[in-house]
Length: 220
Image 1 (cartoon, one colour):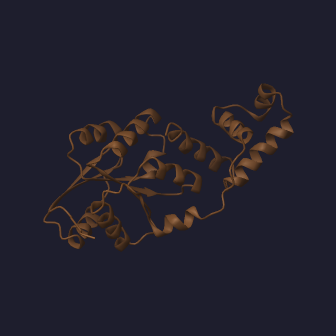
Image 2 (cartoon, rainbow, N blue to C red):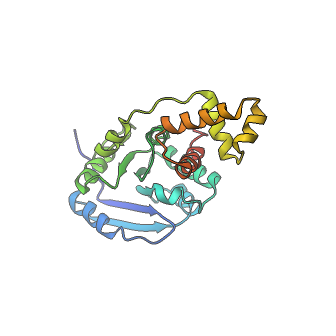
Image 3 (cartoon, one colour):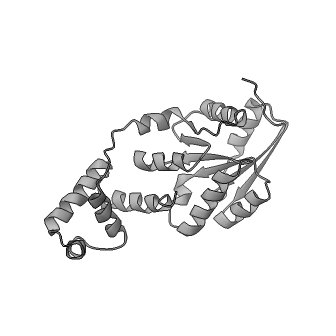
């Protein structure tokens, strides 16, 4: 396969705080033999969206932690992700942290170019970039650690189990759901527990985190 890496690469990392991505950028530049690498930091979805519309970005790095901490409106995040995934000029690199397999699958389905985790090596990062920059297939590069995570057994939820946990996300108590759906509270409680077991969620905090993250991808 012919490797066609550009001489100049414009990399943007998306985070609400200024982070030190200089070492990562230097490593990429060295290993890919790039003459000039421009690194910029954008801290909110609207700024990233504006930059993407100007086609001034070749690669954007997004860490899942900064998407799901509640700092940004869900509608703005959805709009940003949709624009990035539809832009053929931009390659989107997503670092997943503490995401369940069900959410990883949804994220991959959005059209992300590279899906990695903090457990992956710098060498695999370079391999991933080489792969997507040299190919026009549109296939997502999924790293070794993420592939292993996706192998975790995750049974599909029933429609009623989804219904219960989505109502919980909207703020309904089990008693209120029981009354609203004309089902016994014990049944609602069982459906909630079954859903958490299938999603491998250990407690209420993990459930609420999952539901918040899941909401971002319901429109895809």
